[in-house]
Image (cartoon, rainbow, N blue to C red):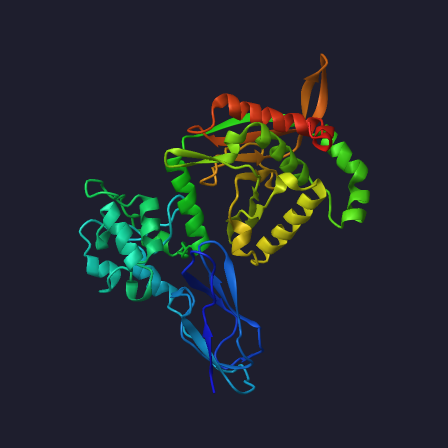
Amino acid sequence: MSTEIKVPTLGESVTEATIGQWFKKPGDRVELDETIAELETDKVTVEVPAPAAGILEDVAVQEGETVGVGAVLGSIGEGEGDGSSPAPEKPKAAEAKAETAPETKADYGGGAAGHAVAPAGKSGDGASGGMSPAPSAKKIMDEKGLSDGDVEGSGRRGQVLKGDVLDAIGRGAPSSPQETPKAARAPSSPAEESREERVKMTRLRQTIARRLKEAQDTAAMLTTFNEVDMTAVMELRKKYKDLFEKKHGVKLGFMGFFTKAVCHALKEIPAVNAEIDGTDLIYKNYAHIGVAVGTPKGLVVPVVRDADQMTIAEIEKEIGRLGVAARDGKLAMADMQGGTFTISNGGVYGSLMSTPILNAPQSGILGMHKIQDRPVAIGGQVVIRPMMYLALSYDHRIVDGKEAVTFLVRVKDSLEDPERLVLDL
């Protein structure tokens, strides 16, 4: 008797996923609840556990294919298995290159290879393999004035899915019949093509690219800068880090101080913690702070909920938990939703200065940078201090320049005099 392997529930508003990797091949022995495959959604990576112990009989969906919730991925039969069966055959990379090279475009600012804007005059049947676009995709295409030939489908038999349409729009597909689509990537010369590698973007990378571009296109984004003397925080951390770790079981880093300083500033300048909804402004009387975390698959932003009500120790513990979950690909959907403000620490990679892009629909994001010893004038004398540049990118539609500068100064004041954080000043 066989047991079907089905796509699990993927979370609120997530209806489909891409097969990222199979960890077993037909004929292999699997144990109950052993991870046998990995699914990639727009937001997180989901592991598929084996619903029964036995032999993996067959794989119905190959890596790179898109499936919906509840779809059958394969089946498990009874027996021990010897792992000797051949792995399922995958499409040859060379064939994929030959088919897509003249028409696809892969760039960070707008989508994925394989989801390219079709050249003018390409027939709709060619883009969708004879299948009509999915209903959700068709609705958006009708609203934006897109035809079948404007969007390359990634579903089964080339069906155009909702994500394909959003990706195409993000890359510059025409949103009305009068607009002109961007030119397709020019084919490489034979000598160059042999030294190139075409890799399909993961769904997470596609979503990152689309959201960043949408944020730039939607918000009136502006960045203001300041610098902070990290001497007081560094001395406080050096003095208490051992005692802190012994008592709380977590290391005392800089993110706890920065998160707390941001929460204090948000209380004084609530516009930075608000968002625009049509013609309304929504002010948040709570602070859910997103913390940008780099992973091998791309940047994710898990959320520290109600950070304004936490101690520095509680914030450090939660950031530590979310960081480990992000790197292990085990973030839950709830961990990624509801943020009101974001902190991005490019300093861990050596960044000295940057202009971070908003995490829509939020109205503000704080960029931290490398701590570097620099000469500064204090009390009429030039001294060497550990300095960090701070960058606040904000939506000028809702946050005025005075409010943005004041917010950044309040963060600076709290970090240069961390006793203010303890005394709630």
